[in-house]
Image (cartoon, rainbow over all chains, first blue to last red; front, side, top):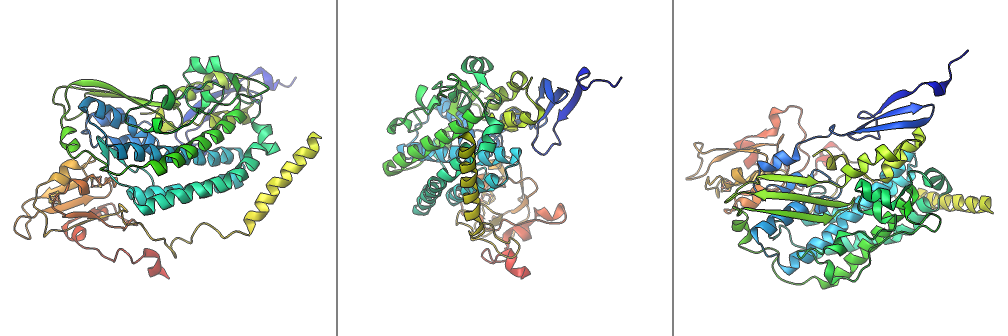
Length: 378
Length: 143
Ligand code: SF4
Ligand code: SF4
């Protein structure tokens, strides 16, 4: 009698050497082609960012934060800056607020453009990998014109900004948005309408809003379930300019399964997010006020901070990104910085989402949650 | 019906792919061509020793300890020699911001690959001179 393949389980390590696993590893137990157990392991990408922050002063901290997620660098550095500003009591000039908001939204769009390509590559749809990345180059050109580097811009500093907008930067940003808007219908055809893409994603990795809340998901992953949970609207930051804009939180209600989302819905939701971000940038560009970009005394004030605690937060491209900062009296460095990355929760949600899925669907489920290893290994 | 709709959508995708074939490639042949870099490009540094006052603010501002200062090595009245370790530098630009005497600048030279680790530690001779014009692109030399 030949042994039945369904009688025994096989253990498979997905990553850290796998091509789709850029710095993470998951242990899977398979019966035949089906996954019965999924055990996500964090720690393969650990660079001790929190400890590094304790050895750097308040102006040197944000380059560390940016490296946790290069794709949303303008968003990733903000919680730290915000926490320092709250403790030091710094006032941010109006112009800096508006420019910060514009660049944060541009960074969000850039992150989703990268993600479209990444998800398509993981599914073997290589044409769609390179087209959004071409459009992304225009945003990278904007970042380069503004700050001098394509990634890790280090744009904000406590009390304002380091670089000011020029005519050239605005022209490049407008061109990037023009190209994006011109190509959006093409991407929608390629991804949202493609029958092959739909077959791979529809009904895969489905969860309800209740489960998503229990697992601590945030950002587009929960907005795809129809819950309008967005920090930009719920807790408007006084140092950002979202109150100058008229916008709605983009949510998705699928007619067939309201209150639930599958991989396809999460992809559609990210298209909605990009449209909202483009809308916000377009409304803010005519409203950029004149004036300084940094308070001249901010530099001296950020040298030594009083004793205090602050919680800086921002709605990142992947969900709620926040940082808790504690300082001691006349501190030059933080006493403790605790980072809350959005992707730790989506990574560990795999434990509940993946069992009973097929092995080939694993990477689709993983990709649709848009996790970035930097956010769980910090 | 569903089959026909799917067929129509497959043809839409083929149409997009067909159009793409006749577009100019977006990439460039890098070693042979290069693109202009913007004015603010944060490439390797240049140290102007005539203006330097040996205040060591750049050393203190650096988050990754990439700069070493040698105050004994004087070429002018009150300057100092700087050693930049480009195996550590993250091109954050904080040292250039910190220098209040216009003695430290970024240059648009970003291609600094070397065969040996030691060659990436730029001593006082290397950091004060540009071995080529910033506008002379590396690629042109290979043509
Ligand atoms: S650019 Fe940044 S990392 Fe490099 S030497 Fe200057 S301060 Fe240090
Ligand atoms: S380069 Fe500038 S900051 Fe550095 S020691 Fe010289 S004057 Fe001071």
